[in-house]
Image (cartoon, rainbow, N blue to C red):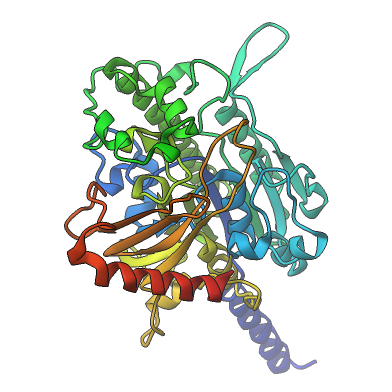
Length: 459
């Protein structure tokens, strides 16, 4: 081989290597908090909570200011996130039903694994009772509800958030250098510890945090707001029973919210550790981080605790996409369009250069940045069809339609029918039910028609 030919071949190899690096697939870390409502972050305007690391990725990434779940309950929402589908499409409406083998193969982790990604799952998997551990190269997760406190033989306690942090470090340290990775992390925090009278069991390291902060009750905390619901809704309602445990007097309310905030700050510290570890490993510029919650959370609003129903506190969640790649121009952006939990899977696949399966009902959020984006949704169907025996736990089923300006909710098992209708423009706290207002009948009819259209489309 002549020197000239040698140098031509050498330059071709160098250029090919550069092209390969430029087109290399990104790593993805998907972070899912449990019961994290949209406004419990500094970047969403909360002046009390301390979340500097999540605020950082939000301020350097994309914040979706109007992000919602299509069903507000842990297992069902998690299934929708994995599959990019409504619960009516997944068929998962409870805690026991798993994905079928065929459906699991069309979730975002399975698609990425088939495409050559190194996959991991850490924390609360939460869908059904059959762990899909063989789907992942790294599995440190469980199907049920983890407990917060883990004791060793010397009675030393490690908080579950710290265990998750350790698993994340282990995963990042063992990822192959020749494969992109996708790590899904599902925190237990800030979910309560069901069955424990302490409820919000935070790491003792945070016990002094927020002690000096006065936390005012929400506008709709008064008994009159719960009493405004019909008797059939109120009697034995699980949301009221949990309110009694957490928010029924001012001192209990403030301590519960402090515990909720402490658990979220614990997550925030893990986000900071992830950013540091990525930098140490040389992965920082090619790892996308997505952060969201599986549903919202009543902090006493409407006299309730928990989630389930279609009010803003229950269905609205944070959603942040942080893409640090050098060629990404979408930094420090806030988007007002409606984003849904079913959008996460198609968006994640799109960011990784994957084709989005036709079965996915969500949409790629990145198309919002197209020069000529196709018309985006103005509303969405809300459904909550979890139906346990009422003598075990009473959570009335509901459906409806939610838009930026209006909301219609229907409690489908009630006779006589119970409905809610709100004009969110002038009543953002949902205090004035317009169902019986004669001047709002045209609006009510329009929302009912739209609800029927969406049901036919998505169910």
